Amino acid sequence: MGPLDRGILLLYTLTTTLLFLALAAFFAGWQEPFNELMREAALPGQQEILWILGGLYVLIGVRLFWKGLVIERKKQAVVQDGELGDVRVSLTAIESLAEKVVSPINGVRDVRAKVVSAPQGINMHMNINVSPDINVPALSKDIQQQVRDSVLNVAGIAVHEVRVAVESFTSRKNRVE
Image 1 (cartoon, rainbow, N blue to C red):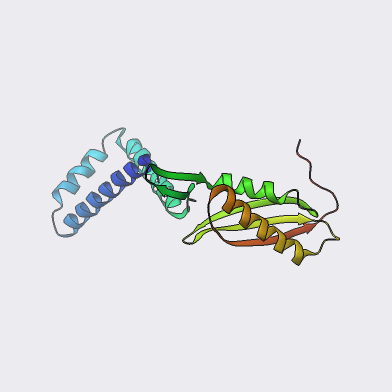
Image 2 (cartoon, rainbow, N blue to C red):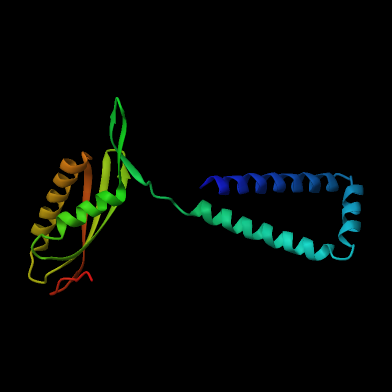
């Protein structure tokens, strides 16, 4: 959640709290401020403004609800904490490295990698399309070893787990145009 959403959340919770405090005061017997508010709302042009503000309030609530549900991926993985500062490599760079390592392997037709941060290092999920005449267990073991070694050698990040999922068997290699 960015600073704008945090500011909106602050205003939203503050106004909601004040609204419920006013509602509690009304139910406790202090009805004069509520009656004054109802007289003001009955003036010409005020109801349209109240409908617009109510709709805006609902939209803000939906946005904040959505932001609360969406899980944001970490953008970077720490490689080394040195005396001169942190060295960071983005997860998309690691995904790209893994895809470049796996693409030339014999039998692999298409590959997509996804990196997930883990306490021990990172976890890698590889989705591949392979030739129909390939030995999948041997290919998977080769992919796992090459990805683990390459990421460790190039980025210095320990790969804890490499999951390989064969999505399809195809006889032609995808072209990049």
